[in-house]
Length: 231
Image (cartoon, rainbow, N blue to C red; front, side, top):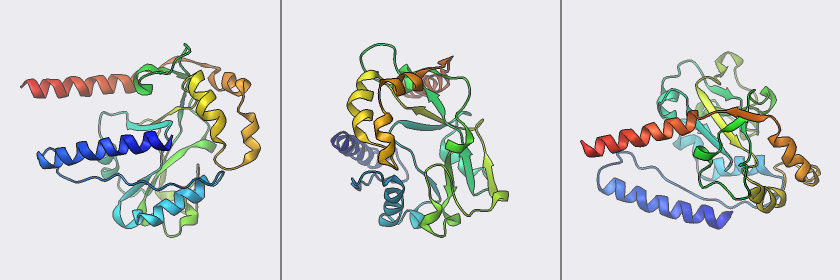
């Protein structure tokens, strides 16, 4: 999917520059790409990226998200606003909400809008994802997939009710067959052979609870945007 990422990044950079020139964006954000292709080394890739781009020096918080994950605030605030409001905390965990694949043979045009069926229960704590204050990162070995090591437990909290991470694991049969089956596991080759259609069916089993929270937030934001333009 590297080419798709590059095309998206190029379009976003162009749009960002236009926003800056028109005064619509006060703070210049940036998109930077590093290509690390060695299989089963996802955690090492995370650490290499953090070091290469001086993220600990340039950023106040670190959030790592895969392409099939989407973080947002359930309170209609930006993630930046939610994080700025946290006092006395360095690490926030959130358990993913696992969404099932679309029912048809095609691929959804928008995961956030069209995939609205998930498992009722959130994923177990063992596979939580995290957001960390960068000043609490002293060595890169602290960074891991689902766990952050050697950090003050008194400054750690789980906030599933505020920070939501939607996980679109299988998305569609087409995506699963062409991407998920061929991409390989993040940590070990032992899991590669498990990505078969039985795994697909099991991943989608129990995804029957309707959850339109993210879709509703997106639609409300778009409606407010159009209302502001009209005014």
